[in-house]
Length: 186
Image 1: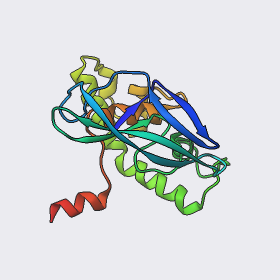
Image 2: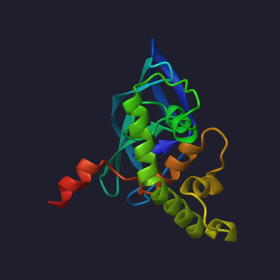
Image 3: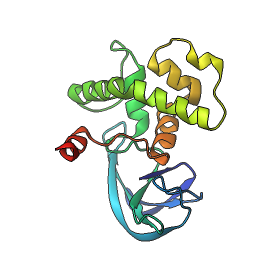
């Protein structure tokens, strides 16, 4: 999987859009810059009002390691059905604040649980990436909540979840689904 932030959406039909990357990218697994397009597939997501949009995303094969990757725009979080803005709003807002996301309470609970269970990992990965790039500062080592440490690296302006997800996915650090992980351990 590859997350892109510089892309255009070309409308195919009502609520169906082709995603076209405008940026170069590397294979997250081997860091090779040569990928072949091998097809496309639909990827559906839900907006704040629960309306569904279908994106046609490209499937890419790395010419070096032969891994297949899907090219996702940064408005999506891998394996989640809603836009990243919806999840971000739920994670940040307190339980008393009114939300504008049309979904079940159980979905809101799962998003909070998902983020809380992975926020320490996300903060650690962002810190590791910053160290590798030589951009680590002393302030990050002060004890804070995981969310504040994440914001230290990506900022707390709207879109912070997309800015968190992109480097993790593109560095091959994204955690896959728990059931997929457990099935590989048997």
